[in-house]
Length: 452
Image (cartoon, rainbow, N blue to C red):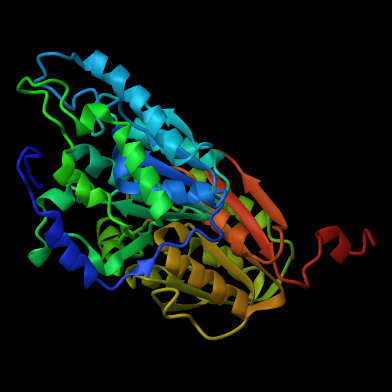
């Protein structure tokens, strides 16, 4: 964990100027973004880290919502003149004025957790961000502090932003540094410059950012001449943030769950997830099979077949079945359980089996894939599915510590990427199941001639 003292001079802004002039970067592009959600652990973080972006969004007609986590009441813990409640009220008013300066139509909500308490109130931050995203029009850009910034509130906020946005359909994330400019060394920087994005600020936008920062009198000027009332963001600190460019980092790419992780799971639990003994598993399997729109299929592909319990049931309704799994251990059991099926060890989507299918089953697999791998898997299914075929996707809706995303996120992404509406979508508290059709699929009644 980085430790620093904001009262120290810190790295000179001029040292960063030389460094930044040589950094290759990709511009931030707001084209196509329908809403922006900014997370600010304290009043003024939104202005320091993303004030120019908020102003640029305003000029582009993009709505912005700022989620303010604390009231910043502990910015001057040793003040002899101002109590924490008094300072909270002051910073509330400053925040309102600053945000209106940047974006007259911006909205905000205050989570109201104690300053310095994001770690203890992490669940509240998760819930607040999820509610903000539920209300935001997609595609949504989320902007949050960089998790390596060195301040605990910033770290937790950045971690939550990465957690909530990972795999969320129509949501992207950029993170901003605040204190890293102060403690980091450009000659051996700890910041992830290979994932940097920059946003150029026209003079008028830069002036609005400066005016918004001026609204935070309690932070940029001393509360009084007394010790303990010093400015938090003095002119030297402010210079880092009043450049003609704002800098953001893309999150580190999320990796799919590893083969080693699955191997370790099957070493601990050779039967996997109690597919035969659990009533939940047996009932879910029955619902999955009942959702198939045809009585029989020519060729089925099961992604993540595990120990082959569902594979054996599919084999009774399919001329040929191929089951794949990333781990070798369950496939030995699957071959015994479903002797008429074929099995192959494969890490999907890279090791995609050749062939065409009129039934593809993805049960409890999608949330172990990174967003990029999930998208590629969808593309692979679409490319290898017969016109009269269907993809059946079923996923657990509760938290899973090993998952990369969630069942709801996977189902939403499938619906977004699939070129046709779902033939079946079954949702209950424990799982969501969707049957996604090829272009030649019609309803069961129409296929049987019961309707025309």
